[in-house]
Length: 626
Image 1 (cartoon, rainbow, N blue to C red):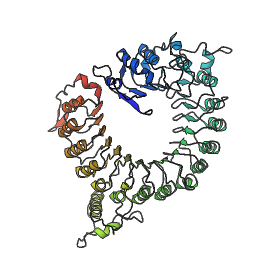
Image 2 (cartoon, rainbow, N blue to C red):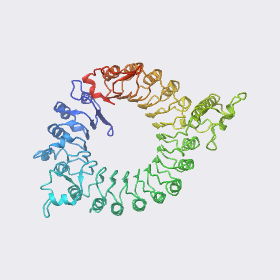
Image 3 (spheres, helix red, strand yellow):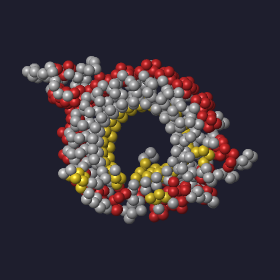
Image 4 (cartoon, rainbow, N blue to C red):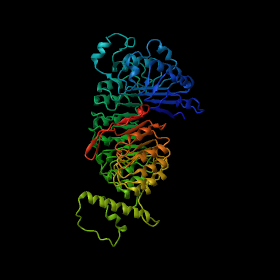
């Protein structure tokens, strides 16, 4: 229960029947609260009065709260351990937050604060930062990602002349790295985790930070920091050898030299993310075999990495430690995926999306055979995967044998023409239909004596699956390969051959689905939506964008059966009336409806310029029109 988080997203907390009342009257104590895109006014003071002493974590994100209410809230949360105030620009805009005696009043409330996040606040200054940290003597983690940190030495000289105590007169105009570094330096022995992502931090600043006396970091996150250079990373790996987590993703200047330093010195790393560090090649990846404690690795979108580098690195020997691996968008082949599967038996999360040539019916069956512990599998846009691979209804020895491997189930008396006079697209349609028919027969005729490969259904604990844009998947797979009691997230977007028949079996066998994406599944009808909303009692997020056969009957089904739905996307469903889509916003849990913007429609070659329907003002907060 200590890890459970209560999230209020786009919710009216000031209404008479506020959802906060539920938690005030609950016999169960919740310690962590997140407020995202909500208004927090003085009407909620009673909640803080009653629950403040039990709250350990408060997160405010994109929320509307005034300074007076914010201070009152902090005063009542006397045992706060984590505070996040993210992207709340109105709170910082005046520059007077926590001014005067307020800091002294809050010192008792924030004395146990270990985690502070002020990310995404462009109006943050040295003075505001100082007021927060002065009241929190026990900080271990600081997040300033996305803040307008200034690194220019000219600004430091302007606002902080030599021989003065900067903490006595912090700047109310800018947020400087120099001031933040001086604060970190003053409490270096306490800090364990720092986050400076999406800032202009450069090699010199990272070097200065890394060489801070008594600083022994366990985690550093600096993703999307384009100014970082090898100079900074060399200092980091030399002085911060205690690091266990390092995120340098989207840092364009990370090279093989950087990775060599990381793998040589940071031997305790358990988490490493170098996504889209495009200068990294096989030379650097080969060094990964030195990181024996690595549990999470993301090397996706590094275009110069090949199978050879991976073979020398993480696939060098049997690895039972690595649990999460992301290799999406790499230039790999089928043999690389097979090698991955055979050397990493304890994987729990795997992302091989956009590995077009690597993910085939052959390689995924090897994954189904070895990675039975997987709870997350993503293979989006891997269009070589078909029903035969997902169901395990054939043993595929080599790539490109789609036709021959099914021959045992072909009708002997059917003579097929040797010359096909249709277009290439028509030929592909015929081939898909033939493939679907043959696999269906194999599933129906399955006996104990017939050979079966390894099916997706072997992964009993699968919770998240993404097979979007795998257009060879049909109702056959949904009927025979999908049986997951713990499945929460399922993405079937652009799997355009699935229909209500397959979904009927799917919802019976995967009743725990909460997030369901069916974008651009053109063959879905109102009957399919009815199967979904009646068969999935936990459904919270439903995407039906571009399913252009759907009508108002689908919206009626959603309104009648979805008691927990929070998000609905029906953009591009041209047969749905805006009036009904608007009225569906009356569902108590629904906070976001995405629909196509009403406008002139073409009828009989002429634009119908009738006025758009009137929307209910009370429901407008739930809609974002496109």
